[in-house]
Image (cartoon, rainbow, N blue to C red; front, side, top):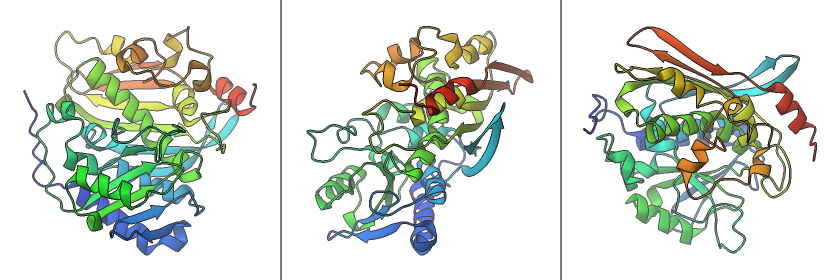
Length: 338
């Protein structure tokens, strides 16, 4: 049965995203970002390609990826004997992770495809207008009638008119009503927006796609992940990545309404890296990235895992916890042991 939430007709994720974009444009100098208007009218916010960007731009981009329905903050956390900058995110609308935060696979070639004219990971509220992927909309009855589309583009290049026209067509809006926030992986803003939301993105996928928990039963979510340093050739050469920070340092908390007989203890154990000894101790570079079969990737613990996870059962008032922050692994990767 498709879930019809009470807020579905009251909230427009693209209009909420647009309000965030307007604030970024107004404060572009303070955010160290550049605002460019393409010939077709599309607005491109450069948060790290030619402009410096930074922590605050990353916070804004993270909120955009969550449909404007999450709070994000950069703070400092001490893990054992080591203090690291850390991104914290929480939302009372976790279904937005499925609606907005998931990477839009197949829309353009993935980054580091050297043969592609333009490659990127794309996410954000504009996906709702395109109703992609359809499997999400088979779970939740939500439609955004906004005439404005907002997308977060994780790319080393700024999109041109050709790319913008293509994305506008997919989102069913005029190019002049399309807003693209560009956060390269190897920028501070890019690193922030990935660690801020991807721990929740990965574990929400595991809960809903792998274990089949309906969106309606996941009530609240909170996550935190250390922010790793950036490398100009991240994922191409051995170095610590945002995925490593998530796998070994990410913490997630979910409030879930269970059903009788559901084994939340087994589910939470499956969410943490330490329960996959074949892949524990390896960097993301060493395991070779995402394969086409995401379910195998999740089953083997190569992805869709974090360091520590907690599930709070709102039906029984019980808490289930597994894992911990593996600070020694993070410190080893930060020393670049390769």
